[in-house]
Amino acid sequence: MVLSSHDGAPLARVLVAGMGSEWRRDDGVGLAVATRVRELGGDLSATWEVVAPLADPSDLLGQWDGADLAVVVDATRSGAEPGALLVFEIGALAAETSAQPGGAQGTSGPPGGLSPAGRTTSTHGVGLVGTLRLACAVGRAPHRAVVVGVEGLDFGQGQGLSPPVRAAVDSAAHAVVELIREVVPCA
Image (cartoon, rainbow, N blue to C red; front, side):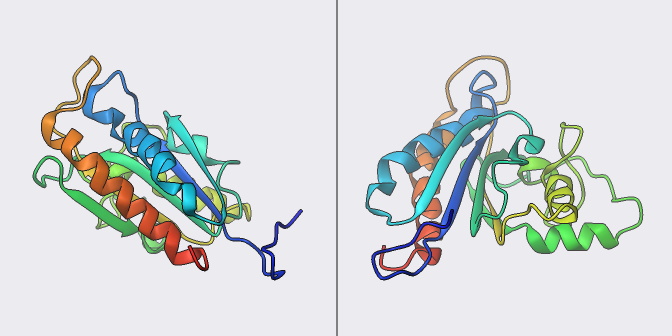
């Protein structure tokens, strides 16, 4: 079933996915941002949903199928200042890594198992780029996939975000809402 607006135009379908675990301090920023997006997104006229927390990038399979936009929010370890926002498209990275022999491995970088250079950095079995490549291969990928990352500081056991990460939650949520507004007419 395709949902339509009052003028008959199809509504955009948007998925916001909050990755991470609230039990590993700053790794819980994806859930915190997703919760804030729910609060801010009341005026958006689209078929959009927030799913959180997701523990593994492969949890996106079946969730983001055919979405006009999938925004994945996660903690990063790129070497940037704690609390810094990183926003980037992952579709090009998925294409780039599929062309690299063996998919180069790295040790630090943006969320969900990728770095801007396309190297795998995830502690998960399949990172975000690998998950997107798999979804593309089976015809179930979103039309556009964007990562909104917040640079973490403390990934130890326990609850609660570090002060710089907590301070970045609102900015990250507003960045997600702006991405949604790009695909939602008259929002």
